[in-house]
Image (cartoon, rainbow over all chains, first blue to last red):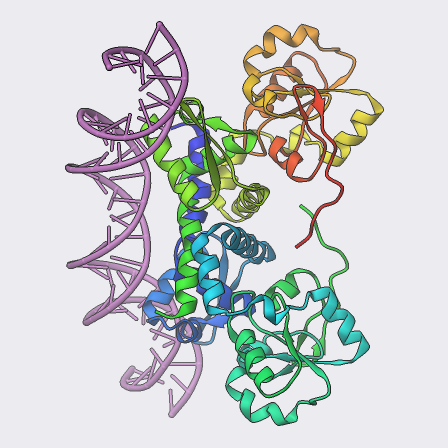
Length: 230
Length: 230
DNA sequence: AATACATTCAAATGATCAATAGAATGTGTG
DNA sequence: CACACATTCTATTGATCATTTGAATGTATT
């Protein structure tokens, strides 16, 4: 076993950790913000023991970190580059895995017809003040961080709170990321109700990764001054 | 099994493909340029049958493509984003896998002492014409593509061809990438021989990915006009 | 100190995968 | 058409992993 082989085996460990759909799902949820073990287990629909084991594997690989808070253990993404990795991963996957394309096209019907909005365009539109920006993730994730100016209308509450939205303004919805179905669903339902609606092409983690400003409980933070290129 | 789970399972297939050290090594070699099955088997030190199977798995995942040429089958990287993926992968791995850090530090002794040169600095130095740039990869890989102005001095031939190098000019060496040991070895040996020498921080695939100019058999190509940020 | 709770550990089962060797396929050459 | 050659296929073995279950650990509360 040469040095080169040993080194590549180490990198392969990272691949092993990313080789399980449940773990990828947990990572996606963690990219929204930190969470406790049973919080994650609930949103991912897994047993607590199973979730714990997956989290430990990811911790060993350095993808997530854990800290104790009272009787709970709170996990979070270890660093920004993990979100970046997740992003490249899905980008390559989408482009190359025929099954993914097919599945995405079939399920997120007329993806192109929904005309996604780019982050740049969203910034522009928000500045103009002509759009209503809604965060359709669950309340907890909104509280852990969201795009400034966005109001939290989770998909569950959408029907109920639709009356609060101004029918004259375009509504832009965003959620967890490009493969989260919340914003697709929200756009579809709002359009049925007669709203002019589009969805943000990416989600909150991508927004944050790009160094754009975020808010936590209405306390706005400054955008990062510059992007570090390693 | 929900739609989200099925989708993540598809992405996990990508992880599975990247979860084997041998495959990562094959990908690294393919990032240098296209190669036949037994060519790859030889450089990676694997059996032909084994190499073939690994390549087929990667092809299924859309990471590499194959074409027939005479009685040989030539494999190559499917798209640039695969090199990018490999890059992020190793970057995250290096930062987070304690074992990797330790292994790299131990083996590539005094990594910092070798003061790697950034691509930007290299471009500048080349323009000034004050350095000798050497490509220390095997001849085949040099032929498949290299940095303009670089001369091919494979590590094997280094001792023999050292006399051809101008002792007054700084020598900068590059190889397959940040974890290829060729350039480390070359720098070490050249320093022993009294040359002022440094290594390029990355390798040829990273150079090409960044859109910097490359040559094939002394036919220089234009650099890409701009980098697309998704 | 005793209890309740969140998380982790340990063991067991079924499934998937890497690697090897030998046979089979398909392609160019004499 | 037969031969040599590169690659792929098939079958097998040993190893690793996901998941479940029940017990054990560690932390706060009463």
